[in-house]
Image 1: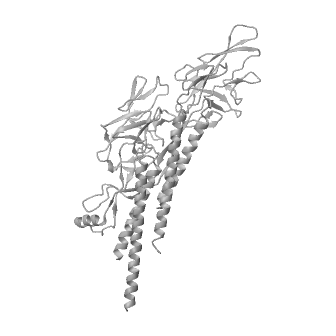
Image 2: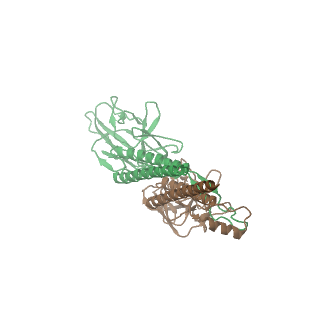
Image 3: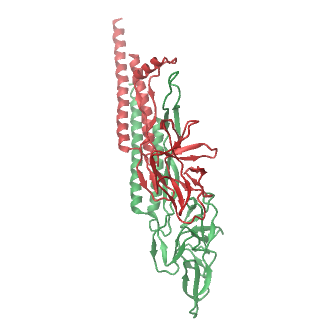
Length: 262
Length: 247
């Protein structure tokens, strides 16, 4: 009986985490470069009360055993790196990546973080920075008097400086990609940091194999699909409810057992 | 009289066990690839007759139950995940832990690890034609998986997902983590009647309505057995009173 209550409790816990994941997805439906997560579940250990194949008589065997499950648990929150839609913003410093690459940024701690959010700006020193002010790596500094900026599909940053009509090459934006991007750790602010599971980053110029080309004047919107999330939310909520009913039923059964002795 | 109380008590015990099985099914209503368990209960007299016929040395047990996993197909939901695969039909994916123990699973929520090896959610490598499957780092073209489980990178055939089946699937024991363990010495045979779908996951085959109905009827049975004990208790009490009064 207690097993039933605990199983149901694990079910409620798991669905709570599922709702947490879904609501974070929905909250980020308008976040540029956001990648949705999905909660995956697995069943917990089984208590084997009787082995399958144990003797039922001197010559026959039980074809099945008795295994009582102990509920469910979260197996993973899997990030899905399917591309989001590209939105035309007509901003010169907005770039979208059409492939698996990530922009590299240097955190104030000196570590490198990775992002799909290409909504960039220029800071007081002329450096290309993210919305949080973290410089893009390798660092790109525009000379004083820059009028016009062009970022090519292969990441070459050009600028027209001063009175000059000619575009001069400043630097090339380099991207990084991972063997297993789903293993990256989200740290908030649209940033990811590598983990052992994600593998070592490989650096390369946009347009190289698998990195993806850059699109100036576009942003990659979140890959969250509201309808999918809503369906998942309904399912999660109902599953939560059902598990609470199991607890209620277990409770009333315990009450019945208590009622044996009057 | 006393025997009746024991029968009723064994009915209550069984109902408790059944309730636990239903609770686990419902807790896993959203677990990919989960297969529901069933606990068919055999009557005491049937078990007794069986055991008497077989001349079992130990005394008859008061009940007999077997948990039977119901392997019917679960709903295949499209997820569009690159390494999400679902089996339609009969068969299991094979994975191996670090000790080389082989497990079978219907949960096709796979991914790659840092070396590009195809793994399940527990990090166990998914078996292909000849062991682990490694997706090349600089894959030219997308990874596609065909209906038979063949894995392609662009146009090149890379490997084949191992999909195996068992003549007698009731031998499989649940190992937790959406995995099944085959008894020692038993290996899965090549599955014949299946199709693999990429970008989809097989949902749990728990039917919530059926489980709820079963839970209600089971708890009522529990209640009925309890009443049986109560009524026998009161009959017993009355008998003791009445017999005692004549003395």
